[in-house]
Image (cartoon, rainbow, N blue to C red; front, side, top):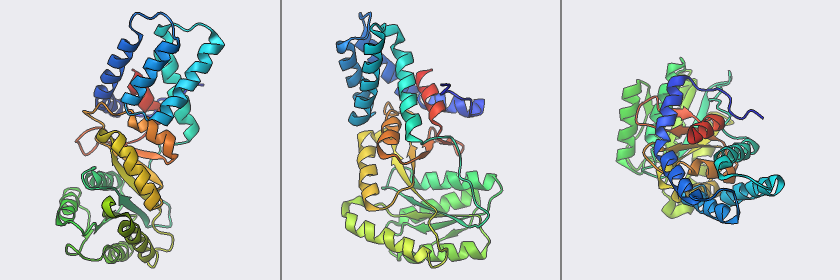
Length: 316
């Protein structure tokens, strides 16, 4: 099967390659040490490979899946040289991601029955506001009318940061003062969006995991109130995770998926970190589409996640 289909433009692929460079060099440095002096893939090499994958933040469960797949190939082919390990590893990771049905490299399709309401969740510091700003830019670039709703009213900084992005991208923002009812802001944002005939409304929400019950109640209320304006809102709940935190990103995904229904993921800050393997584990373990990955500071560096291009860049 041809897993590695050409999807991205050469410029975007170059950005992806560069963004994953630290992860890749760290991974293959560890892999080289694991197979040094070995001529074939045996139990010892597989044990070392398991350690390499876990330490690269692929996650224990996903690592075990990958190792089991390679073990099957070793037992079937009887003899596999260590020089073939990169190729096998690449094929098995691509195969695993193909089975999860995530990361097909498709952007949001905005239906004619607009507005499309996107609710964004995530803890402070993961790049949530930046992701919203970059998404607004991408939508606007396609000729779509976008409205932002600043419903993370717990922190004044969150409202101010979203305002900065609204000014930068030149899109309207609906906001109230710090401490206002988030559901009230969301309601106003949707009403404003409907009145302006907006194509997309992006609602920023708070992410205070230290009190999950309050957060759960708050997000549920935001959804209920939005549905008074747009009956089937939100159309997507996007959870933003900081890829540079590795296993902590796993934990956040676990906590948020237990708190609210999450329908897609964005994994940010993959550039400059050795923890890019977390995307493989999160894709596999949560069975929630990784929609976007952040591979740089630039406004264009939030990319639609494509598993084929990702694996290709990882092993190139």
